[in-house]
Image (tube, rainbow, N blue to C red; front, side, top):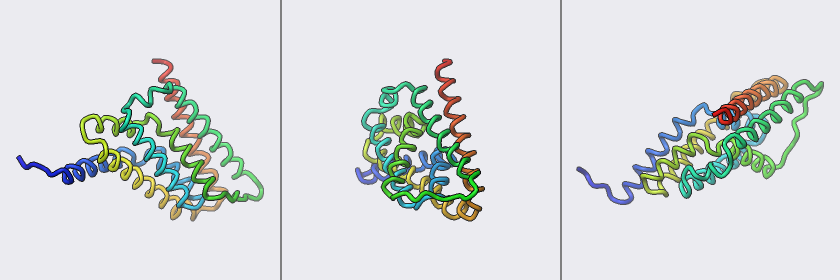
Length: 200
């Protein structure tokens, strides 16, 4: 059996966590959120807000494990996310129906903060946070945090890139409609999750 040096163990754990988390998060709601936000706002504040949210979520997961998510009832978190997504969806659809569609210019700080809050609430207690907490219970905490955060950052970057290259080529009213439908769909899924939790 080959014995790994401490730095070797760090990199093996970090890359294993990165791969697992990135695969689990591909196509997830946060990647869709990054896509739609990046199509309407500058990409760096969107990506920065997402990465900061994931870094904090993973830190909480590593330090406190799955018990952090238990501080708030799961149904309450899901309902807050559902209302938030629904509000974004309705606003996007209203913007699409306006005679002249104007994109509201927001400061980079405002976009960063709204992205951070949206993704933090959406991912609190999600499968990837619980996966990071589970990995941290059997592996060293620091490489799990590094690998998990880098994995989520990579998936978010893919979403931002898709939002800038694909969605921005569409007419603005159509983009608003697509964004609105996506957010409303995510709201329905979050609401269904809340109802399922309450029914148990």
